[in-house]
Image 1 (cartoon, one colour):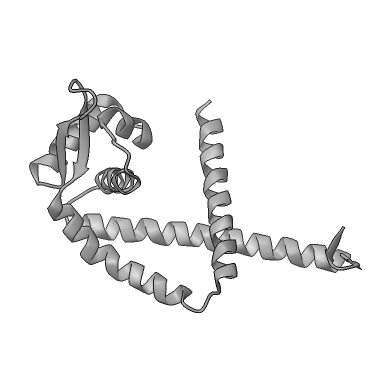
Image 2 (cartoon, helix red, strand yellow):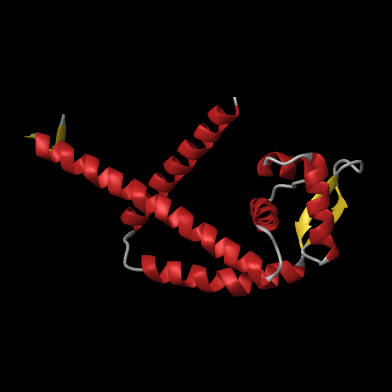
Length: 168
């Protein structure tokens, strides 16, 4: 096994590589924990619990991907019962954070949309965070950013795979 050219990896190289991978994993866990705290802070400021905030994020992410999401899919994504998600959607709809509309392809189904007020509140709060993240990555080359993207995609896939196995 070689790392570059004909150079063979020494035991020290292998140990250093393992230590770096471990450190990256620890940083990812810390980032995940910090982002959970950000979400809790946002929810607390706007009288929402963590499931409310997660639901809004899931619906907004679906909208941005051009995917219609209904209460059943939201329940599955949140790991909640249909009745619990109905109560959550009712609560978020009553304060204007979510809207229901008929599914354009199947009038029996309902599609969820993030309300304008929730988008405004989220934009104000998370927009500043996104600006800070953008500033933090300004110095990275396109190659570095591609490597970060590959890593984060692989890490997300690993988490999703883990969760699928845990549910089995």
